[in-house]
Image (cartoon, rainbow, N blue to C red):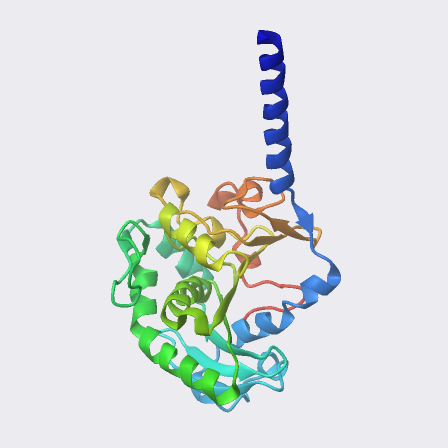
Length: 297
């Protein structure tokens, strides 16, 4: 009987381990899956442009790559407040919200000098969210400064075009803001909208409770794409209490796009395993190219 119990236990352990391996399997995206991200890459890139040109949609090739886009509102000054815009994409049948990124070298310095901290989310913007859910104070402050205006324009754009889909995009700092906006819009819009986030070169935004909350309410609707040895996605460090949400796609040196399940997947096919420290990173990879598209106006 003891032998049978032991054997049964070993079988259970084997099954659990097999299930874990299967659940954590890394898969390579197909060419059609990769190309489906191109419109969002262009939208994120366009956020670097001055809003006065963005609102007229005459700001260069990345703007023109989504020719059916209907811009509705924009704001920010590119300095104290990152540029942002809201509009409607008929081809995606979705409201698009985009946030500007920032200078790579300065951003990396800001995220490694430790002059930041984790703080609870603003309860007026994120009602019902536990105080244990915390985010980078700088990211949270920036997102809070534009959140009410963005929410207002998202609602009016949804109404004007009869859509319930909202997609928030951004690169670098813009990706961090997009993730916070994604959670914010999900909470504020409730069942009236399906919110998706597509970020590029996203740093870690919050703590474990933040990552768990995002995974629970936006699971399957968040993708953060990392390019080769980009160091930005590995900061702020996990030793400081920061954790990535699920949804990583890592572009390897061979230009394969690998789907990396879970939070902070440590496989060498994923960013944490490929770039264990910032000294292993290459800041030139931060801007792309993402399937041939380089960030910038």
